[in-house]
Image 1 (cartoon, one colour):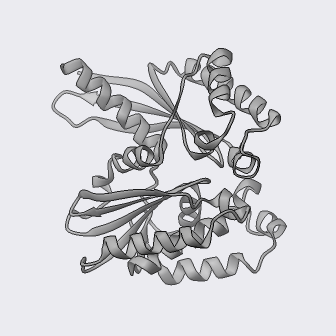
Image 2 (cartoon, rainbow, N blue to C red):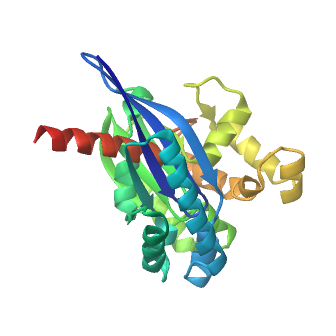
Length: 301
């Protein structure tokens, strides 16, 4: 007996807002499969408002309302049976975040769950990483966002520790990360990987996915520290306009890709990792899994 249902995740980040629709494939006697069906990304960049002015602008409030209504209609067309919307650091820190959550509910019927940094890290780390990792290895999982980056140490398939830092691409672009925050992150990484023989980094987020795609590497193969450093240095020789016209980067990717690389390279350097693996998963994938497993547990109680 084969059952296919569609679930959706809305990830309201500091750089972009995403709608992921996944097929949940259940077959008796086989493990459940989560297959990506559709992904829509709108670069609203809420963080640019919040980290500078502490609130989301009228223009971006309207864009949020329009986007959420569009997402609602897309989900209806796809016959999505369950969905969950999560907002991260920009909405968390915005003075008018609660007001916007209420407006979205009124305008589109979508209820937004504003989650904390630790919860965000937990949802991301709960994604099906076992497909991508070697159970005998130790990893530092780094999920770079616009407002914050989540770090998780994984040893032999188990999460050892996890922490969220207010170091994100949009914050860095606006020069809003203090030296002390970088120092705190360095101490956290060095102390939490201490004692492990060899560390590899697992990278997630739109920027590392793009870098991996550009590299032309086959899925499952890592990017080396040398490759990442060379690419980082090369990017900086191009202006923002040249990154769009000559390197074919989207305008909302061409600026944040450099601070994102700085975060990944720092994580690799401080953990002593020579390789970064890119499993191409993130918060939206974690939300889909959490909807499914919450449904399964509530059905069995």
